[in-house]
Image (cartoon, rainbow, N blue to C red; front, side):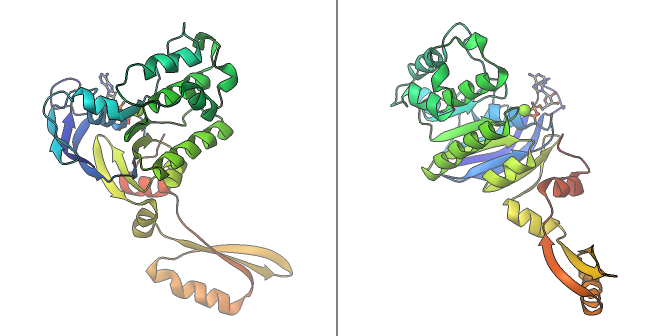
Length: 284
Ligand SMILES: Nc1ncnc2c1ncn2[C@@H]1O[C@H](COP(=O)(O)OP(=O)(O)O)[C@@H](O)[C@H]1O
Ligand SMILES: [Mg+2]
């Protein structure tokens, strides 16, 4: 559905690239994630894909059609864009923010009050957005980004700064939209969000993709599973963890043979552990 070929973007129009030769494909109905630390180039990539930043170099192909110049109105009608820092009209009520935004589209839109209900702001619908907390503004921005029932939905750090229960309801909406067939490009520096939501995730650092696969495959390919054994020693419960590296399997077998084993649990590495292994950098 979306093909990005050798994208570059420089804010300074020199060899200093915020996005540096990035290529990927996003399939219809897929949640495709960009996972990387602050400054990696996630928001810039989203801006270029969504047509909000100039396509300086490289190719963007939507449904088989290469983009030439600025995208047309038909494209903007079918996409939704959630920003890291949403711009909400503070003098308008929450409801009027959404009504105004809905009026900009030549397309069937969601009912603004219903969308406010989804994001837990129905009771605040008639209040001016200027009085809202940061998290509430973010929810309005999120609601706004889906008002035109987008086929392609761009979400930049959609749960950042939200309390866990609000973050969960936002994740629930994203999952539901995926089920309904929406194609989603999502950026995050949160490995849990990437792991839970994304069908495939690209690790991005310094403007470059360093790995790209499903979270599960990334763990299988790059992560070293571990096995933790609980056993009794002098009448007390103790535990020991073994790496499942090829050269280490005998050690676990020997230990099991020689001890009184109570439980055995296997564990998988986290996406952040793999990110660090591949890039030498954490996700903060
Ligand atoms: N408007 C801008 N002008 C100049 N440089 C920018 C601008 N926006 C981002 N950058 C720089 O581009 C790089 C990538 O930023 P960004 O795409 O925002 O990363 P991320 O979203 O992964 O945190 C960073 O080095 C950042 O400082
Ligand atoms: Mg960003």
